[in-house]
Length: 456
Image (cartoon, rainbow, N blue to C red; front, side):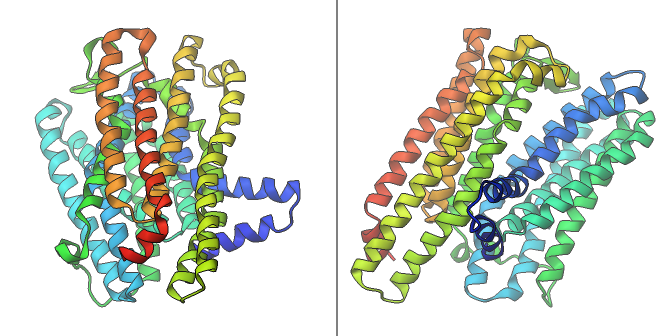
């Protein structure tokens, strides 16, 4: 954190419009670069590879399969993501650096093993007509995703943003280059190309971790020790990832809002395309959230708890506490303001954006609703991040559970209400979830001094 924060502060210290723009651009690349690279690459693959195939249906099948692999691998590994991140953070605090790498490796092997078994069984049951090669490629891609999400979130928590971004660029560039040569082999060629890119990405990230964290042991499973982990983080990570994808599942598996793509895999032509674009639209808000959290809030947070630990005067502690609370509010409010401006700009240029991707203008009304939904999801992410910063695990769990349950219920309701209501399930779910999380965060901040001195 210190390195990234220092660089951003150094840029902003110049106090010019150019320095602000530079810091904003830097934050955009670090915070949104990986997921933007992923989404845009998958979208552009259709236009890049279309000239090399006679049946474009193959590319669409590939895109939908990858979306499914991403969704289910994130949900499967969601229970480990926050848990292993906190476990490693605690070992760093205890200066037990030798336990970091073997426990990370153990957790990755556990998730990849579980991913391999579940995806192999699934593909053997539902894709037996697609042939052995397809089954293996489907399984290997799912397995590599299960390892990738774990190493990615750990390196993100360790603030290795630059290397993550560099690795994503190389990984997805490798996929595009290889796919041009292998697309003539059909769906299997595309899946193999994607596996090469993801394997390169995974081994670059894991190699970086090995290089920077020495250990005499290869694997350890200390994270199975109940005294060293927090069960609430297991459920929080799972429920949040489930909440993110559950509205898509509703549209995918409702017969009249989806079409069959391959076997049990279905896609919603109505919902999927505008949703992809809506996620691209939150990049500006992500950049501001990242900038405010890393540069401003982190500094006030450190000042307050350092003052508490070192026995500063009560007046000084209260002063730092007020600054930290104000900064936490500003993280949320400034993210809302900037993303609100971006939301309006995207609405003004929505026609040009859809024409750029050669997408029907009939998607515009739903695109606006889903852009509002992703805007609210960004705000929810900001509140959750602050709750987790303060180690409010139960509050984060309640918020994540609220999101998952309401997103499923409201999305299912809007599907049966009809096309005019599509997307509003996500919007109202996030409104409820934000309200719940804000109330919980405000309750904690109102009693922060009591919680700091009496409960720790």
